[in-house]
Every structure is written in C-alpha cells, then in structure tokens.
Length: 228
Image 1 (tube, rainbow, N blue to C red):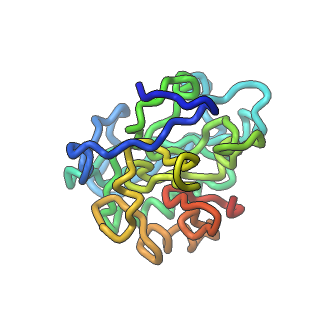
Image 2 (tube, one colour):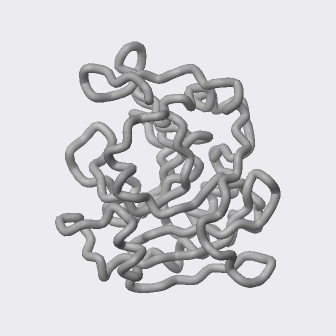
C-alpha cells in the first residue's frame, strides 16, 4: 500500500529498479483459444458470469445487454502467445478485434489482459498495476463524470509502461504511481506506446484517438472512440 495524500490522491513514487524495464507476463486466466496465430471470439451480449465478475452494476451508463465479451490472443513479454479478455461496448467489439490483430502481427508485448473486478475499484493503491482493460464503471480520473471506460468505449494499454501524468510539483499525479520512470517518453522500452507507432496507427484506423496526444495532460495508455 502507498500513502494517500489529504486530497485522496497518491504522490508519485520512484520506480523500483525491478520494474525498469518492466518485462513481466502474467499467467493466463482463460483457456487458450485454438490455433497458433491470432484468434478472437466475440460473445454478445456478455455472459452473466462475466458481468458478475466485472464492475458492471445497475446505474452504470451502459446497459448489461450492450456489453460484449471479447476473448483474443496477444503477445507477452516472454515472446509467447497468450489469451486474454476484454469487456467492451458491443458496437466496438469488431473494431477492437481488428486493432489487436494488428498488435499481434506487430508482436507488441502486453503483460496481461483481463476483465476488471469490482474489488479493484476500492483496493488500496499499490502503484504497480499493468492490466490492459476496457470496461470499468468509474469516473474520469480527477472528475465526477463517468469515464469513457464506463461505456466500454475506451481501452488502456500497458498502463505501467504508459502512465497517466498530470500536473507538476506537489500537485503532480502519476498513475500507476510507481511508473514515474516511464514518464520519460524519450527512454524507449518494450511495451511503450509512442507517436505514430503500430498501436497508435491501429487504433486510428478504426477512428479512435490517443490520450498521448492530449495537451493538458499525458495519458499514453488511453485510447477512446470519442477522443475523451
């Protein structure tokens, strides 16, 4: 656990040497999809048991029937094929299958891809999260309005290698908090998303925008359909 400031945020922390460069691949939690190349399966609407282990609840801005469960393969930092999952808005599922097909072909490494559980919303901060994810029924960071993640129309890719970074000095916020070394975007390491790379181009090809190009803050992990 990391110490929480009076405003509820957590101060950025130095990155431990064990996490720079970060090259972990977490064990798969799903049975592998068949074959030995890229594969994806879309189930729409998402099964009840998947919703039950997600952050969806009555009052979220998207109905349960409007979410799809996507299982797909990705490359890990161990240079091996893995199977992960995303919970997304059903009307963007096919586009995201295309995006991750491109990332698979480029062998872009991902640490883990899992549905976010409800317990994660209230978990104490540890500063080291790195799950590639889409649907999370929560507010935008630092605001009260729902995030695009709460609609299933945003994806965060390798958050640790691509941390959210806003402000300066005592007011600076970096998420994940231990990922401060990765705020230096000139020191290129595996898993980082960079301007005009394969990841940015793949999302742009389906009309999604990149948070790494924002002017008031940097959020290079974040891609969304409406640019927010």
